[in-house]
Amino acid sequence: MNQRRSFLKSSAMLASVIGAPAVIKSARAATVPGTAPPNERILRLYNTHTGESLRSIFWAEGQFIPEALQDINKLLRDHRNNKISAIDPQLLVLLDRISAQYGSHPTLHVISGYRSPETNAKLHENTSGVAKHSLHMEGKAIDVRVPGQDIAKLHKIAMSQKAGGVGYYPDSQFVHMDVGRVRHW
Image (cartoon, rainbow, N blue to C red):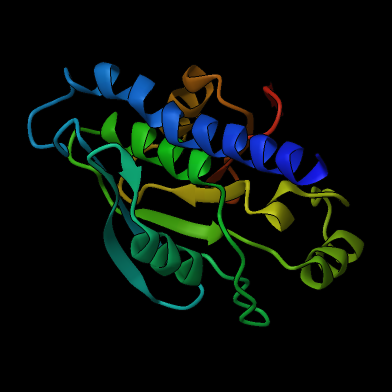
């Protein structure tokens, strides 16, 4: 009985993750010319700490692409100790929706993706504004900027999504986004 409950629970979770982009599909059908087709989700990322970049179609024909997710996980690793963790696919969908607002899926410059618990603890001790239980440790948060674009525009777009937390750091030139509860600072 426990195995059956566990199976049903994981199946329901998987269905909710896979089903979410289908809702976005209809909203994306009327996007600006030059963006990805409505049956694809695309990201262009540049890691400001490692100099690595990628262009990845991470979702197509109704499903996430495992190899693309692995590549994204690697690029968004904790650059301080090279630890890799799974990034929440819903965060990637959020980034796709936000970058589509610019019309041509610009390259998002990543300041911070995944953070290992060790790194987060050190940052929390030495830096103001780093949460003790940061969603970066769960692969549910990212700090980004769009080069050549006003950071206030990115902040406004992120706030309009109402998809989780949004932190605005104009002095440091980045916006924090996560897929936790809706809040802002």
